[in-house]
Image (cartoon, rainbow, N blue to C red; front, side):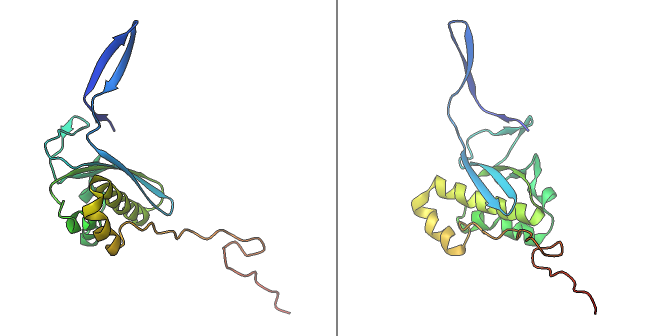
Length: 165
């Protein structure tokens, strides 16, 4: 997956450097269990975002190079990932690209929602932080898989079977 940004080449003493003009996105990280979502949030619709030689339109959410509707199926998932955008009335006004890894689909979805909410707060803290915090989008869910304990029968809380007589 390639993110193309405007670049300017400068030469100093025979060395070529790529110098980025301006970062036109907001970066945020969302986590849930083992899943980590790296979110790029483009708030301005005027900026041209090119992903894999394809221009993105305002309102699009791309996850791992494909539209989010193909990555997460169903209405329940749609309501969940559009939640922070809907509450802040930014649905259809911004472009979001996400690279998510680790965990399962449920954990990845929660990590994406957490990352989008954090990016929106970075965009405009005074307007959106209290709204998103009340709805619980900024709280990282700390629950994780319980580790296996020594002396158990293979699982975290399973007891060993005792002999019959």
